[in-house]
Image 1 (cartoon, one colour):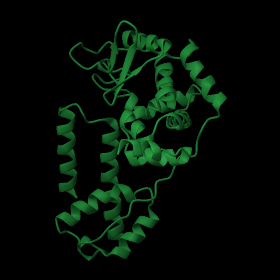
Image 2 (cartoon, one colour; image 1 turned 90 degrees about the vertical axis):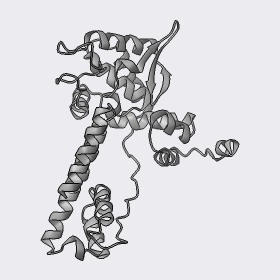
Image 3 (cartoon, one colour; image 1 turned 90 degrees about the horizontal axis):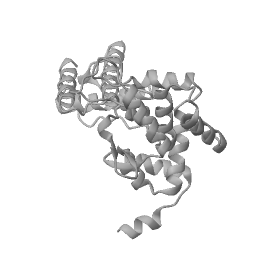
Image 4 (cartoon, one colour; image 1 turned 30 degrees about the horizontal axis):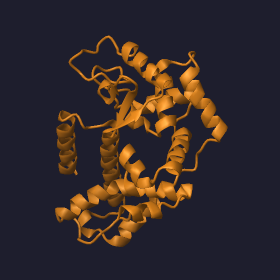
Length: 272
């Protein structure tokens, strides 16, 4: 277990050095380690060890801990590769649960108008909540945005997401300009990356969990709004395009498309 954790830490340091270790990746690594610890504790409570592990044991553990089963897969693979447990053991990934929280059309519209027009709201709240509602971006992606993701020409301001530029509405473009101008803390330096939503620590972005709490406090919760924005996007674009634009897994986009009820088979046939 210590060796696996050390490997995760080394990989995290390498990705952090390259500037590609996101908060979502950090949370994923922590979740994998926590699941492995829980699994080993469960083995001990059953008076088992990895070498005596059998498929029925795994099935029982995964059934009792549905929230940890996916996170335990990396540890099982690591243990199998090093012959610490019998070969052929598997933990099936749970069937993905499609979201159930959405907004009515008028609620989504009114909240977006609040983001764009309500000057009583904090500037960072307006920017983050608008990005969720217009582009279905998760907060973990929004907090990683920097001034390098913003570009301009004579007519428009663009936001680059997954290397794809989106044209920003003029009001949102002005809000983002104001946020970059006034939202940078005093400890920031010109040498480091300027985050759109900087955190309290120098050179670090805003904590997405705290940002989610802040949005809820101001009556602009993110989850239902993002789900609704994703549904709206998939009503206009095929899932493979959405997957590429937003950087989500194609299968995830396909499951969303199933929920929307759109049939893009004709579009796919034109590409093949």
